[in-house]
Length: 114
Length: 115
Image (cartoon, rainbow over all chains, first blue to last red; front, side, top):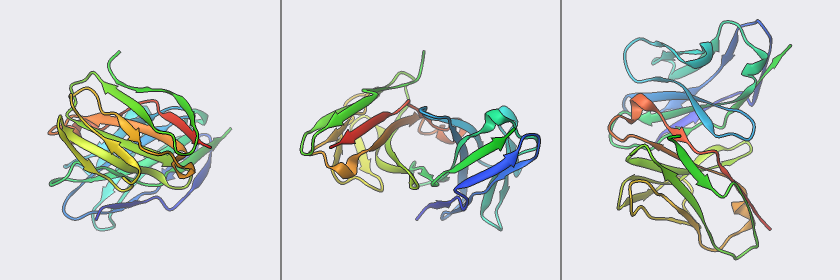
């Protein structure tokens, strides 16, 4: 079975500081991994994905994520946080074959303090 | 604008009533799905479809029905609404074979309250 864990309900960071939002996953076979962001009263927006290749992937708005197969993690990072990055962030996983089902984590609320 | 359109945006139902949440996409995506979002529980998959005429259950299918008669439309039916179905519902779509490269496109959601 597929599963995703986001261990932190909320992450607080000061503006200008680096941020990390954690995600670990469990899936049989090779994973496809995603990050999405949700602003208040909006649908989810795609940020970035890992399919194969370089373990460090870059996405929208200056975000990046590092795939670590041995630790089954896919943490979201940004070198310098902005107040406008404050939102709800979701990690998602899909198996690379056999199903098209995406499983989402419970979400992490990021609060960037001015 | 191309995208996923959900209607209605808000709905209040009485317990036992039925209704259909509409979802339409104009991107020729094969894959469509419905999620519900509840505080502390993230997004949970209700039903999904990999093409017209093909549907399957997700994690929380009870109390919901779907059908996929066209590529564009994927309505979600609540058969007999219950307060436990109070939630925000999202429809999402993607290409099937190219899905990993494009990710999901989400609708803006339907906020449903069952009283």
